[in-house]
Length: 139
Image (tube, rainbow, N blue to C red):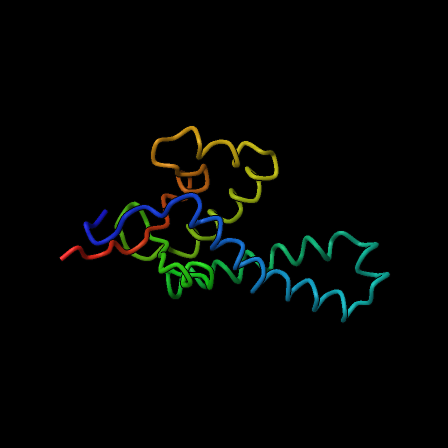
């Protein structure tokens, strides 16, 4: 990792994820809810699943194109590959999202970062990527 960047904290990553939820996922839910109607949307959980998949694909595209999602941009964070310290590939970003959803749905993903000194999650390790924040110049 470059001396110009340091790992983003768990708190920063959480706040960035909340921004992504409100800027990407919630509008997708509203779009489906109002276009399909309340009854159809609430009776079929496949639409909610489709919204999660759409959210993941949109977030993946943000990471591949700019190395930042809207939430990451708010905190000046970047997703980089631990292999070459550059932007992640589409496969890495998509794998990151899928592993994140799976591990957090079974709670282990929530606990795992607190067991590691560097705070990386299972999705960070398996996708060989991590979020960094630009280091402040002290000069």
